Length: 286
Image 1 (cartoon, rainbow, N blue to C red):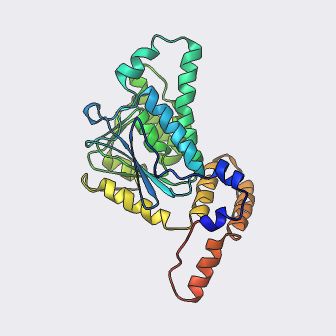
Image 2: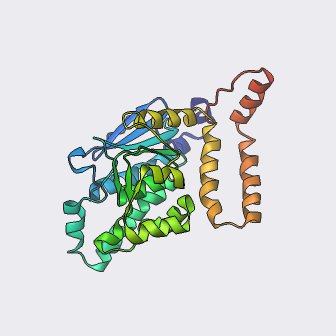
Image 3: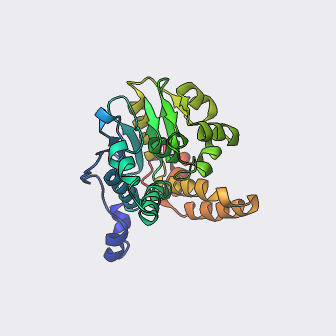
């Protein structure tokens, strides 16, 4: 990436490229190993609930990841045997019942913006899910690109159980595309927990792992992805997202344009040269 940086104006680099390995997270854990970042929701005594502050910081961090040069994949997990219990009852739900409509809309737009930034960042996101995965936690899992679970995973979109609609943070758009309309309707109308076995069978989980191995497996998967052609992976993520709203003809044309762009990358040339030399390509993300 340094060679690429040297070919463009420093002002453009400064505005659009940054390193995030040294990012100091305030409201959750953050670490970078190689090209993979791990976000750990770490309030295990409460099963890792989200707060106003953690919502906002997650939203902003995923926004910054669009410009990161040193992070090529992201893992999201929770501490202490649970993923996330949703919005903190005392720090979020309690204050919300005191707010007027403009402030409530400010909050719901902020939570929705978290999903938007997760979908917009080019890095594939792998969720490592054990134990409780409820409410906003289930949404964060849903908004990830890949999900590894365990047999003790319990995923619940429990909004109707607190008097709210199931249409929260994009759930009515995203969840049916992952598990199907009927299954999504059941979870959103009843608020019941989806077991790990159901989640794997329905396609919510890519696979199930042992609880003490799920994080390591997620990090290995993220590392494998990060070792690939990361610019092209970002294009794949973009097209997977955008093509939901396209006709087949529009999607074919969009993919033709996207693939032509990828054919101009140095990684494409590296792959060809490696094939000719009967070697495994080493991608550099440019």
